[in-house]
Image (tube, rainbow, N blue to C red):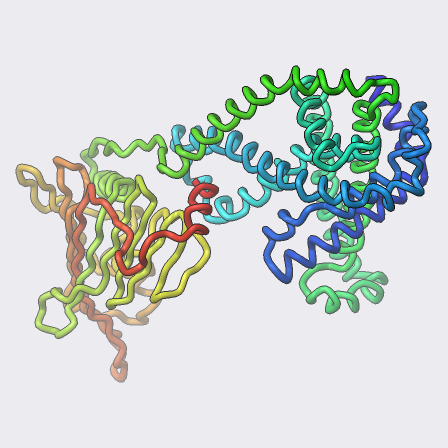
Length: 522
């Protein structure tokens, strides 16, 4: 606690430290924003924080002096950048590589049991496509920020005279020999990162409210004209306040963490070279064991994710006696299983729906989905979307669009026939049939509907407790004398359950990017 109080005191009273940290945050933000826009958001995460390393290193002697540990002549601020720039660049690149690897490891070790737990609890529906696409970027970013505690120790050691590689080696040794200190710094880092995010969220909500009020008053003349500068969709007050909180909050965060690390890990100038060498040798075995343990844990998490190992309750629910509940249960049992759906239409008007319009194959266990609609194939998996030779963003297919499939909420079913292993449900009311076919009310489309034929039926397999097939026929016109409006479908559909989907051969083997995304998307 005393160390934290000293760090807060130094951070608040050292103007040079705070100004440097502010400039560092501003420049790093500009660089990463530029990379995210021009290259990709991933590039903004992967680019090493060269500016932050060099900038904070330049104020290392000042921080040590304020902490009561004066640096020697070789570490004066004026000589840091000139004499140790190559070593600092090595730490920036090498340290960031270690930190990104650590961020990936932390993400996999935290995210895998969380998602596994959601699947086990039957709440996989919470992991929608947006979660799948955004969580890895956010998670790895936060993990990288936490892991940067270790390279930051190397920055301090370079300021004290170590080489870049030597500083990184010493930082790893310190992590192994002082795990509680490093762990405490990681916790402080996490608290500061979360606090900054909360402050940004609060500022965004407040700024949005201010902007909304400004549109009704005098400030509208000042703020609204600036909106086109930011694309016309983001309130400029939100940009201004959010940017201010990010810059100042980030500066406080960087300055405080750097001060804490300097206070904990700046090398005492009385330490002998022999003592340092003994510490390195003593920690080699511990470091090797730690690396092996983390590698084993990360490899296990990766195997779980790559193998799509997910607890899934695919056993069907018992069928109730009520026809409406029976259909809804059979529908959900079918939907929860790996299944194939085939949709037929009466294309030639011969009264027989024998033209296959769509085939949908959904593999729940492997999260693969193939849809063929009028000979156009779309393949979806956790890692990719492929359609007619073009690839898209990865997406874990949950349901998939199925033409002509009546929803589970359709009611007014009656039992027409019961056989040994089948129950035939039917709809006779034209309103119900139209609702099942279109999802809309009949009277919404026709002012004066005149029905010539109306029938719908679905067969439930009582052994598997799923839907096996169905057929719908509706012939209705508008009764107005001069109306030519007609709705005359005759369709049928079939289900096969417990199927397995293979990646289409014409797509070839999965690419490296697909394999990587499958690792992160789980």
